[in-house]
Length: 69
Image 1: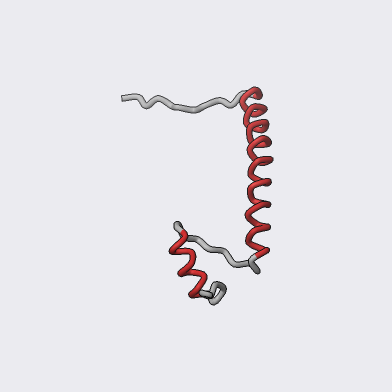
Image 2: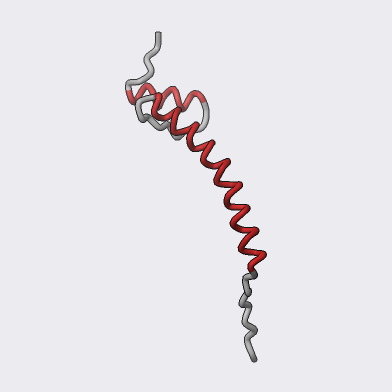
């Protein structure tokens, strides 16, 4: 049996579309990353990776950042 080659020839139109799409996505991505970077730096470089308020409070207590009143 003969195998068919599935080579996709990329046209200049596809390249221009991809570059335009990447440019638009990178604008949004940079704004979002800037916001999260600012939030992280405002907490002294602390990054919390947990879902839910209760788990975040426990994580902050373990780090010594959050204390109960």
